Length: 82
Image (cartoon, rainbow, N blue to C red; front, top):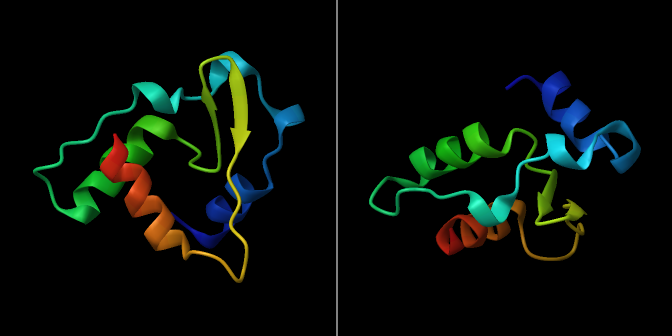
């Protein structure tokens, strides 16, 4: 992924998409037997934009505070749940 593609994903907002076009993260599954890197690739293939997804009929914009848990730690926790 290029820096431009990443920035575009971060900047996408609710008004830019339709609910039915978003991946439902409650349905995303990754293979826990795979490496962390492979689970990340599996998640990204299924989610598309990891920052704007849905859970059922609810749109979710994922953001991280500069002083909170790191993106890597939060993302790994998400992968371990699926």
